[in-house]
Image (cartoon, rainbow, N blue to C red; front, side, top):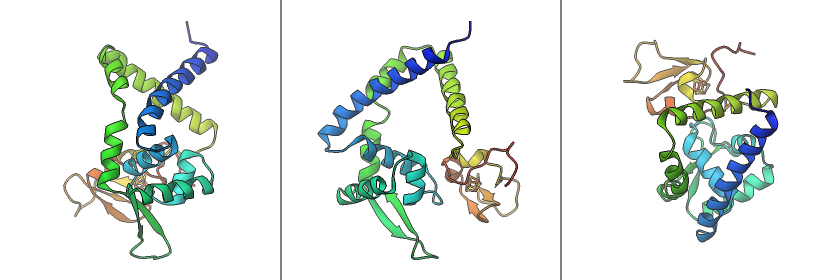
Length: 198
Ligand code: SF4
């Protein structure tokens, strides 16, 4: 029998609450707010074309003011640094420092979640991951929001091109080479393969 939307909503909300409660405790000890961690996590996951203040604002669905305040706090704590773009000095990129990456690896994913997942059958874990990914994709489409998907699965990503580094590819949108590790990162300009260019 298909699950009702209300049940799904209740479960998703409950899961979010449980994760938030645990995370809040860990962050309080480090004098950080959930939005600080969310920003650091986004910056650890995104590529060099997506680490601007406006991309953070869009991804997290917050105001410019909140993003600006958050970046100031994180910079003051040496968890990130701002770097001017080499081609256009007016453009600023935000990079997570090694101290920031260390903090993210300490709190996410939480030990409690890892422990809970270890008690679930591997096939159920895969199933849960797929369902959640589908749900998030559908919700983003419904809300007409950007997907921020992984570069390697983007329609602009060209892997069959001569002169590429091992495992690397080429972005046909920004016209730049991408390394193998960059293919794993999420991007503001990502477009699904089945979506026509606008
Ligand atoms: S290939 Fe797509 S996801 Fe990757 S950098 Fe280009 S636009 Fe972004």
